[in-house]
Length: 267
Length: 332
Image 1 (tube, chains in turn green, purple):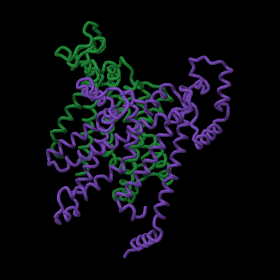
Image 2 (image 1 turned 120 degrees about the horizontal axis):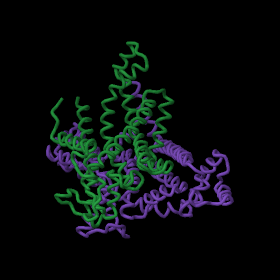
Image 3 (image 1 turned 45 degrees about the vertical axis):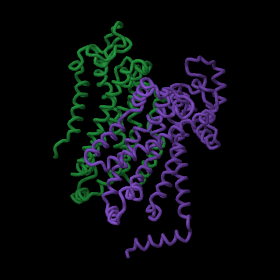
Image 4 (image 1 turned 30 degrees about the vertical axis):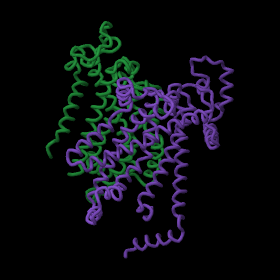
């Protein structure tokens, strides 16, 4: 195990900070995120209001800190849905019989032709906008990409000598899958999840921004941005700071995911 | 000589005697695959949109709020063929798609093909300029970070990761703040002509350039470290010559293969960017159609985007084969 680099330490710190925001927001922001104060509307960032205030005089810093919980939760839940679907599809294609691989791979090809948000939007047309549907939609839309990676991982691992050894030792199908194949695919799955969370946060907040996900007055970051959009030319802080938190969390997750990936490759 | 080698050599002779024959066969197989993907995409869209709760005839007449009369509902069912069995409706739909008829939009009361025809050009222009800009940014970034030493690489790869993680809507916001509100150099909303294209293009290009730059840098570094580059250097080729004639090709290859995916991500990014910059286009139309639950318009746009995507994958494959002679020789 090599020592973590400075970049990694910074990323761990950012993630720790965001987790504290999500779990115990009152430790970092003592105020009430919904407390309005019309006399203090549209204050620019200052020492009393670090990120300024919005149209009802609500403290933006408090709202952004409280927004960490829904935003991160949506990102994590969407990734979990996406990865779970992808594991089922990827395992079926990677370990199943030829016809199953053929069928699943064709299905994935078709889903790839509905790029990114398109699949998510299709899901939202059917089930209507909202936090739950946009979360599922993002999970669904990211699943094909993960499934393709997992399939090739499964392929590579299942032909490895140690799996052959397990066959020779008389291990049954399920035992071979759970004891031999999964632990070896697990490490790259972990990397995939880390990289995916960043992406999911960005996508889910995009949907909220478009008015298809979380709705104001929820303090979710995308919804905060959408609310601030009206005032973009006069009150920049309303869109700048929520967006900054999205970028920070997505970048931190991506950097960590990549550095774990590189470690795995070197090891 | 092994059996496999004899086999390949024989295949090469075979293709040499019929120049272009194998390339043509490859292209036909590829296009047939595309047709399959399109039909499947149309099928998924058709049945998925049938899951929308409520009476489809009601949706035609503007949703449950419109309080349409029973007679009007019956008329709508008749007109759109909604009283036929689902499978018949599905087959009729495919038949109409095959003749280029995408149906009539519920919300705009215009043929979907006309609506898409008016909007697609705008989005394609935006997507293509963004793709070109992303390529340029990515190439510059990759070249700089691949030869910039330790610190240069660290800064370059950091920039790439941040660029790739930036959501479109935030980047657009920051660019508008900087270039429109503060400096006043560029318009925040769409104006006709190239000047209105600048900010939307940068917004779409930067995150993509982050992704492409990461891929390009890795293959550029691999190529630079490979023995053939050493031998080229030993022959006295200049740094620029090595880059231009030898390693750049390798850096471009994976990025070419990714360009279909890139175009797809640009089109879904266009949904956000066109909304922010109030720019007419397919993305903004799609968002409106999603909010209105305009089934024919949504399925028409989905189908056209899928068509653009599959054509782009074929184009990327053709370009791959042009840029990489190895793909033309080995059997696929």
